[in-house]
Amino acid sequence: SCRFVGGTRQIVGMASDMAVCRTLVLWLTMVVAVSEAANKKPLFEYDDHYVMLNDFGRNEFYRRALSRALATCGDSCSVLDVGAGSGLLSMLAAGMGAPQVLALEANPALATLAEQTIKRNQEAGSFTTSNVTVVAELSSKVGLDRLPGGQKADVLVTETFGTMLLGEGAINFVPDARDRLLKEGGIMVPAGGCQYVTLVEAPDFAGTLSPAHLGGLNLTSLELLQDSIYWKATVGSSRSPLRSLSERLCVLEIDLYQDTRDSVPSNHTYLIKATSSGTVHAALFDWDVWADASRSDILSTAAGSRNFAGDVAWGQLLQLQEEAAKDWQLGSHPQRLTVKEGDWLRVGVEFIARGISIHVRVQRAALPDLEPGKVGGMPAVGSPARIRSSNRGAMIEANELLLPV
Figure (cartoon, rainbow, N blue to C red):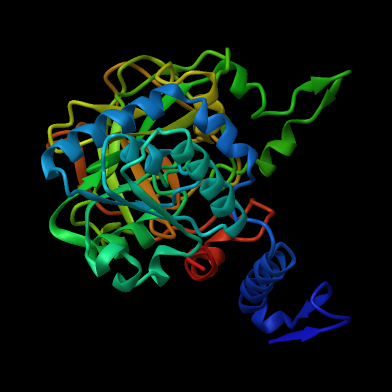
């Protein structure tokens, strides 16, 4: 149990139940943070939209995808924009002749800005024959009666992807909107995507992994503080070299036409070969989404695929790596994983809060009798005992409760 002293900022846990207490403290901390930031949009500030609007490759991808979709469904095509943000995708659809567009944006202040921008462009003659309506509401709270004519949409478009493919929780709300508000046989834009992981050697990044000898002082015992599970660095438009030591591995493929939050596994393991010799300093996360089932038109966050604005908006994530034991546990002291080209490795991937976060561990593998690729699951493994921060696995339930809210 927990005893509260002087409000939520001082909480004392009874020793017999400290794990439960820590979980409750984490949950309450998130509740307090959300309550104190009630007038702010969770996860994003308005300036995030500036850089996204200047990611010209992203904008052109959606323009092409919407053009093909609208040509398929004809002159009476209606479009539902989930997570409309600035309203750009709604305006693109309207400019291509969609007679009815409904833009859903949960942030009321941002929805107001989108409405003003749409009105300005309508008055300027950019799409005089289209009716674009902005609704400041979560898609999960919008019923069929809010759609034009009470009819389901022909096209559902969304750009609700984070630095991780599912980092904005899209798998929690996009399938719901699809199943309730999109016509049977309707078009999803994009059609699907994949989260990728690549093992990399990163010399500059490696310099942050181990405290140096400074003025004759040996600080290497502080390596015990290394967090190889939760801590991740966002990189993008960086000149720091990254050298791939593995193929780019698709660890989570999402079909937006049929997948739901229950389609995301708790974990998977993969058998791969090292493609070069070196030290595995980190796992690099990036993703692709494809416009339609042909997968011929792809929007990617892979290094070098975005302009500067796109790198700022999305970037990629790096997660520190060390060698995991056969039981996937990490040792009492970080052990660097040095590989030679052709070495077999197992990559264990944990999907946290339905893929909002992903953790990777790597271990050596004996000469396999299996083909490379997905080879099964892994046991539940907790945080290394040496990590001094709270076990963030306790936040899974809180994430699943609060992020959709």
